[in-house]
Length: 180
Image 1 (cartoon, helix red, strand yellow):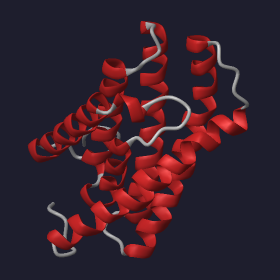
Image 2: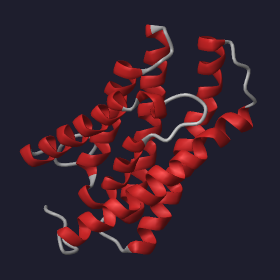
Image 3: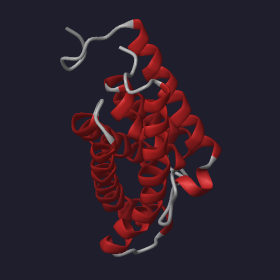
């Protein structure tokens, strides 16, 4: 047995590392749109990879978020960056794990449902703690509803449009049978 009941092999470790590196690189390269109230975190498109690549993608987007948030967070404080890294990683883990359970090796309808689940999880969790990061870092008092609402449009684009398209294209590339 492996990590949390999932088999761990060299291929899985390599996939997780590659996904983590891509996620962290996108966050670090695009910090101006990956943080703050109105954000379009393009790296979140990778969350949908869990519906095609499975458990290694779940691990990859979790670690990638942790590293990316530590490297690029604009909060001006190591403590706030660490809070963002831990809570953002938890959001990514929950969102991608639920998508994995809903749509792994399943059709387009399941992927759309999984994307909706990821959008809701990321928007609610990130939006909920983002309110406090904005207040602590910049003194900006933002209502909770607005903090959550600020994450939704970017998540719709990154996860709903780009991520679902990426997952469908990758699954077609593998001809419906992702590598084992």
